[in-house]
Image (cartoon, rainbow, N blue to C red; front, side):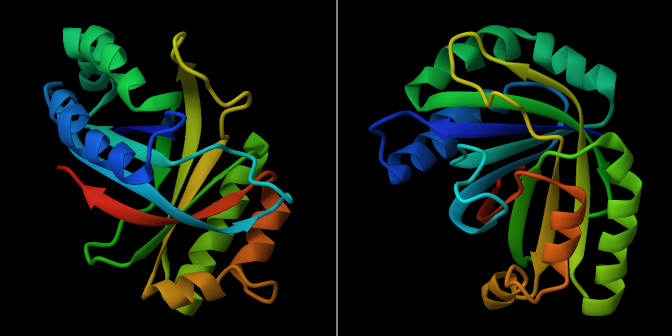
Amino acid sequence: MMKRMTLLAKRDGLATSDFRAYWAGPHAQLALGMDGIVKYTHNRVEKVLWASDVEPAFSVDGVVELSFSDSEVMRQAQASAVGTKFIPADEPQFLKGWTLCVVEEQGDEPQEQHAKVLIPFHAQPEARNQMWVELQGLEKTFGIRSVLNWTVTTARRESLWAEPVPPSGFVAVWFADVATAHEAFEPESRLRPILEKYTTNGVAYLIDRLCIR
């Protein structure tokens, strides 16, 4: 499985409700014209639960996840008229920023609907394996579920703003409820020290998830 995770920043002056409506409406229908999409998810940012810096390091109103069965299927989708022409032409209708990360995924999403937190970060490649070991340890101890998405390639749109330094990866964490998600980023939590140990510029976004496919 290959996955694209794209950080989206809404167009200046556009209301959040209008941004989400256009993204889930006309733009999503256009994206579904690409062949080979196995899974299509909108991660709509509700609020920042924690940031390792005083100000969040990323400008994000949403993160779109597109999964394909393999790299060749993804390449063909991206090379189609929808991927190369129609989608890029439509994006300025609701976006000012677009930063693509193609990621390798470790872990499995839960089947049940839980409170989701998505954490983009910067990190050194050698941190990947040990961070994943410690995240798995939390799963066994506290019953949370996590997925580590590690960036392998990035891209930007010439017509849109992009993050100056794209994320090295994203941790997705699922909690039993929203209150538990808030507690996980308190100073005495067990999750925050792992993030602070292995990453910089981490930002924990509480997500309102919309599954398109």
